[in-house]
Image: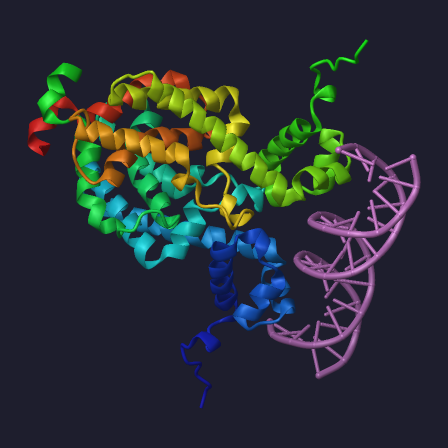
Length: 205
Length: 205
DNA sequence: GTCTATACGCTGATAGAC
DNA sequence: GTCTATCAGCGTATAGAC
């Protein structure tokens, strides 16, 4: 009769326990305010295990970073694979980011709120990671397909996602009280139509 | 014959030398990767002076933070005092931020790129500081004056400034090669008009 | 692979001369 | 006020038993 581990936090693989603990601690206090001992304590493992698995605190942060970027990339790819038009793909990605910010706050906080360059000097900045590249790629294709206004790719991409990312930051900083999904419809409308009221549209255009 | 100090970096007031050195170091390496000794060395002052003036490393960071927020607030206030309409005020602020990002990079980087909460736990998040409040206030007045589209204040403000802030982050991260002022006209146009091309405007609205 | 105990270096902070 | 020399504590990393 083989021994079957139950899926409780205590029996979760050492690897996962360390990463889970590190995510919570890093987001709450920041990388530099968390010691190996803190992680060891919260994850219920020994320091030795942490070094065996990840080679140290920086190794934990790096593994976590890659793990979460991969997870985000999967989500973005799922949206792309739905085969929607490019505009709708952008919408779905924004909605997904909004939902994640509410339900899996720490993941979003670690991936797009933390300053990785300060503790992972060899990693490229987050905005050049695959999920963000994919997002800009969608916008680019949208432009070529005539679904999205032409212009400098960076400006257009920032105009499409900038407002959403700004709201996420405000929410993560605790300044914004409302859950993001509630603001989704209005933001999307603003984003695609622009903030100019129709009443004075001619005088501005 | 009184001794007159020349305005060279060596003769600048101890206070200023410390703050200048700290700004450069904090932006380049991050607060936690800079030691008091680093600041002391770069500023050509003694550790004792740093403690006398600011009470320690955190004191330096806090003084610097308040100093720069005040400087930004002055700039925003100058724009407001010009008495332009609210839309034009937003434009001017964005342009000013773009120019500062190019010419006084470290100031922008420290004020809106750093994670202060990790080393200044008692400070409110940057987005609730006076310059940002003023910016949201301008948007709010613009809405009431009918110059800016109605809607949730947070959504509208994020739609107005989100794209610009996004571009600033991309630029500071070294991902964006072009100087921001070059992108200004196009961003402003996008921001006020929306990214929907006129050709399909009806089918979306 | 997992753990504990230990060593070493760095950093923030202080004491005391000038 | 400014400086140097020194201390104490913490945090990383390792060594070595199990």
